[in-house]
Structures are given as structure tokens and as C-alpha cells.
Image 1 (cartoon, rainbow, N blue to C red):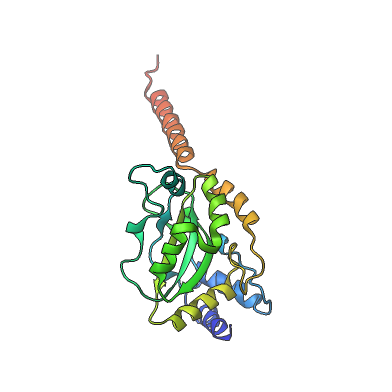
Image 2: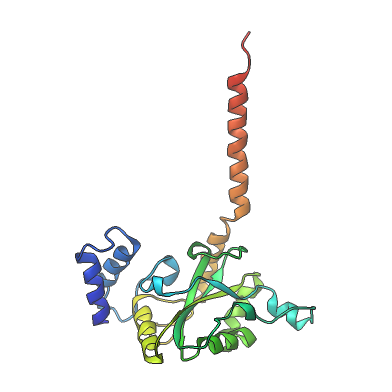
Length: 228
């Protein structure tokens, strides 16, 4: 935690990232460093410490993958094996819930809920894909809503480096599905957050676009109408 505070002091006081989300996050972190449980809820932030170390978000389990696989649907896989890391190595990772059906996921369309580390991240993700491991019941609640589980990861040189990164993330942010060193799980906080995110769907945005387009069309017609 001391090392993390030093990094934050360098960002806040050294002029790096002034006005950025990193600066804001670090100011909040420094002001709450005396607390044993982080006050920054991970789902409130799109960009975090170590953000640039992570891969892009990828879909791990589709919202209906488990159901279709159990029903024996032709070609159905229990999880997206093609989206796993190409190599085995230590690393830290985050799991999230995607609120968009787009293949190109970004931080705005993902609600991060869990972080962890492993000596072989590919194998760890496979265990989540097969049956959810210790998060199975939480996964099931999300699949009821038809939403996918996604992941991103940061490869590390060693398991020790991955553990240090995981520790810094848990000391900085309160992940809704983590328990160890992070208080109690709080999945009930995620459900209304997802509802709020899903209310801003692409369909809503598209209807707004057409409404604006219709408004301008009517305005142009009114302007161009010949006067008697």
C-alpha cells in the first residue's frame, strides 16, 4: 500500500495526468488510505491503475452458452475457447459483465466485478468456462439476464509479480465479487448498476438519432417552403 501511495503522490503532485481519471482516482485513494477496505467501487471506473497493462476485453462465456451446450445444440461450446489467451503464462486478470452485444467490447460497455491472479491464466479461465469454479452461482445469476461474462488479462513475468498486481488492485478498488482482503461480496449492488447501463441501449440511441433527423428534415422543409 505504501508503494501505491507513492505512485499516486507522483501522479497527483508531479503534474502527470492532471485532470485525468488517474489523477482523480489517486486523489480519492490517498484520502482514504487509512481505511482497510477500499472505498472506490471498481464498477464506477472505466480506467484504473495498471489499465494500460491489460489486454482488450474478450467474451469468455456467452449469455446462453451453458444452456445451449447442456441442450446439445449443434456446434455449441460451453465457453469461447477461441477467445482464450494464445499462450500459458502468469498474470493478473479481471472478469466483467458485458452490457453490449458488440464483438468489439470497450470499457464503457463492461461492468468489472472480479480480479484475480494465476500462474497459468489460460488454465484459470478454462476452469471458469467449464463450470464457473467458485463463482458459478454468480455466473448463473448473470446468465438469467442473457448477459455474457468477459475477461481481460495482464501477462506477468512471474506469479509473484501477478500477486503484487492483484494486491494493488484489491487495495485500491472494491470489486463486487471478491471476498479475500476486500470485505464481503456485494452482487446485489451490481444488478441495479446493470439495469441502469442496459437502459442506454443502442436501440435507444438509434431512436434518438432518427428523432433528431426527423426534426431537421421538418425544419429544412419549413425553411424551403415557398411563400405566397
